[in-house]
Each structure stands twice: as structure tokens, then as C-alpha cells.
Length: 65
Image (cartoon, rainbow, N blue to C red):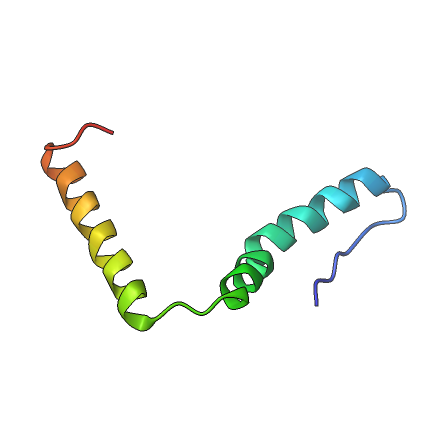
């Protein structure tokens, strides 16, 4: 549960902005989307390997980002 400390003189828009930022940082929505469908561990691992290969190619200069 997210708790936002709002001062009495604080604007409701500022409090809402703080809430949205905290909500985004907690990655609740991202976890919800991941849980909607099952992905096999082999598919997850393959994605991680491809991402690592891409990062190495960026670092070595073979690909320009």
C-alpha cells in the first residue's frame, strides 16, 4: 500500500503527482502485466541472453545506438 504524506497547505495536484511517481517506482503495474500471461523459463532466459548480446555489441562499438 502506498502512503503519501501530504501537508495541510499542499496542493492536491502535488500530492497526486507524488502518488503517481511512487506508484511508477514501485512497478506494480509492470508486475501485473507480467502475471497476466505465463512465459516459459526458456523464453525468459533467451530474452536475457539476447539482451546481453545486444549490450555487448553496443559496448564494443559494433552497433551504433
